[in-house]
Length: 347
Image (cartoon, rainbow, N blue to C red):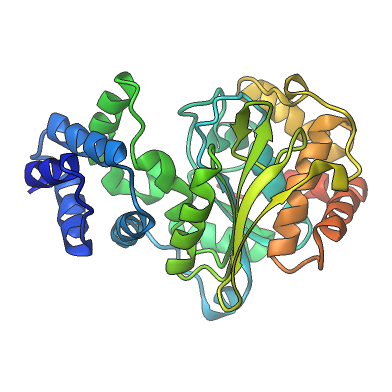
């Protein structure tokens, strides 16, 4: 089936939901060669994935994930994820991960989905591990951490065991310089099924597409962002240029707009001011931001993205209010306290 679908994709055909279900079954079948899988993934990327195809792939792959046992009381909460697709190759520090910790310190329940570094020097799993925060949580432990700490990390490779059968094909594509649908799907596959999401993408044209997918998956509130940095784009809200965004409330429709950094009290900065490094360097930056020692552009980038996180989670009425609240969470010591408590929890 996979070879037949590859031919259809090369002819420009859009795949139906049933065809995608068959494709996923073949992709996780260890009896099918990595070459055939890579050819399918390449053909799909070259055709260009529609948002309907992305939705169907996400639904099928979510069925294969390990779901944490969240009780009814937890399900009544707003559960937030802050996650970028990666792939912008601008080597900034782990902004989304820092924002997730600030949001948790500010009273938001945060189910952070992520992985180790693929296109950057330090992925969310790498830097959280360096910070002493457990990343290999069992489903039960993750549910307890959400309930007691307002934060749990859902390690993609740990909660999506079927992905091990796709890794070799993805590696072949990467070696050929070819992105695949899996470079986009990450934020769509959180096994905790968040109700609100702040998602960063590396190109503005992905904003509307990914927002439609999230809406189709039942997310209540989401914002998909791609921030300008000169001629390049961050998979974050940019403090260095305008940010393209698509957002929706599940029951109030869809909106596309741009966010201008001059509307916030930001210091002058360049991309070099937001550079990260390996997991040790990134962990040091996060500690400095959360403890209040970092007062420059890195803090500004965190406050700006945290403003959106608090807004989406209903903790602030406007982005400016969210910006001020994020600063209060850090300056009050709550953010640093959250980091210490997460690092001291049982493994």
